Amino acid sequence: MGRALRRGIASLLLVAVGLTAGSCAFFPGTLTKIVPPPDSVIVRVPPTILSCSASWILSRCEDEYETVCGYLCRYWDPCCDCDHGCDCGHGCWRWRYCCRQYWVRKHCWGDIAIKLTVADPSDDLNLEKNPRVRVFDAQPAPGSAASSPTCLLTVEQTDIPLSVTDITDNGETKIVTVRLRDIHLVFNSSCSRYAARLPLRIVFRDCGKEMASLNECVVSIEYSKP
Image 1 (tube, rainbow, N blue to C red):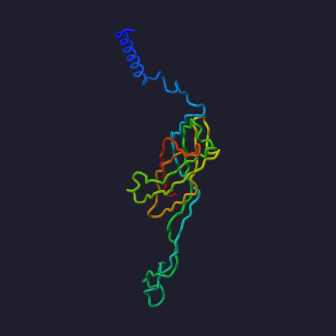
Image 2: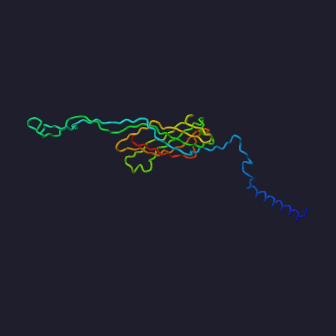
Image 3: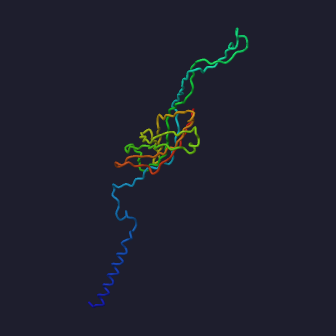
């Protein structure tokens, strides 16, 4: 074989190698067409809260009074300025010892009813996954700080487990209704109205790990002295 022929063959091999190396970054179609995922691997989409609302449901109220005793009762004495008898027309007001009750505050108890509309494409609200509605610490409602009779409706972070009666199944979209029970409100001269914003999130367990909805939803709640 001549030297010129050997050089030609070598040049063709170098071109071929260059073309092969340049094509390594090119993948026909998607990666799954080359290496399909195992059958056991499933891509799950967490729940999304589409809307939420809350309302106050009153259970009962009780007024609290304070008893105060002393010379508090005023009465008219028609004879206080008369020397003889009581027909001189010179009476006066006097004070006598007595006890009186004064309103101090009103205690009310009730529930906060929460309703969420949830998109659940992966069935994460299945009771086997221990789904819960997580209510985060209450936040002040807009404008409440400027209004002195308005107080923060205090709620600390808590999880409300879901039961079968809490979920209305409409396919991938589900309605969740839960309650924060036995909330105690105290109304007095400084607090005639309670208000708060409550952030909410769906949490559940999957493969031993705590998971959460893609988003949180914030509800506003307020209640004035009945």
